[in-house]
Image (spheres, rainbow, N blue to C red):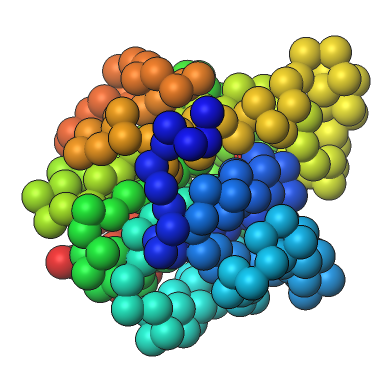
Length: 289
Ligand SMILES: NC(=O)c1ccc[n+]([C@@H]2O[C@H](COP(=O)([O-])OP(=O)(O)OC[C@H]3O[C@@H](n4cnc5c(N)ncnc54)[C@H](OP(=O)(O)O)[C@@H]3O)[C@@H](O)[C@H]2O)c1
């Protein structure tokens, strides 16, 4: 199977959320195809452990890990600048780190944390790595979204959920943001040789939601052993979008099980994608190009 895929020898892949779950499996698969991995992790012990696992699979490969709390725009900018200074070319960027939070809290920068981590980090990191991605064209950006977007509607007047916060709704909305961001980034970058796609991995038995607190944590604990697929299964569409020749040149799509899928009407709104982009650019000070 791997042999039929794009040979990733000589390619560099930056990935977030590779210390756990589907990101961890995707990183290992991409490394097995020959890619050199640059991980962005928040926790040193977990980052070093992920690096050890990658090195054990492909001794000699110059994988590395950098650290940042992706909930903070300043941290995302810093780590992106560090990577961009060291990597002349980035062939693949996988924006994957994400979480759900039962209780509303603001980051030190004043953003609601679901919106900050699940959407703003994708936005700011992609921009911070723009030059090395363009330099590697044809390059790929892969964004982990979710079918959870299906119940979401954007409320532009209250993106930070200041009123009537609900962790599940905030999560669903952030995943709608992932699809709209994919749409707008694709529109802007595909002509420059960088394709941008997103995916739903399925309901996967990872650490997702384990520390979210509240009722949702309990519901997930019961539901995962019954209904969830393995991280190996859940990682497949990330790996596919990052490496398969079948999606060479294809951009702006939402995929599930390695197939193009149709997201909701809200997720197909070019006007909302543009409006979200403009707000994200204003909040972060990047994304005007
Ligand atoms: N599991 C599902 O059923 C499911 C379904 C649809 C979509 N998704 C999406 O899949 C993606 C990956 O989730 P998963 O299921 O693999 O969950 P997971 O096992 O909890 O992995 C989440 C990853 O994100 C990292 N992360 C969390 N907060 C971070 C922060 N502030 N800064 C930097 N890294 C951070 C975690 O790091 P640590 O290792 O340090 O915790 C971990 O590597 C998410 O975007 C999620 O929304 C999951």
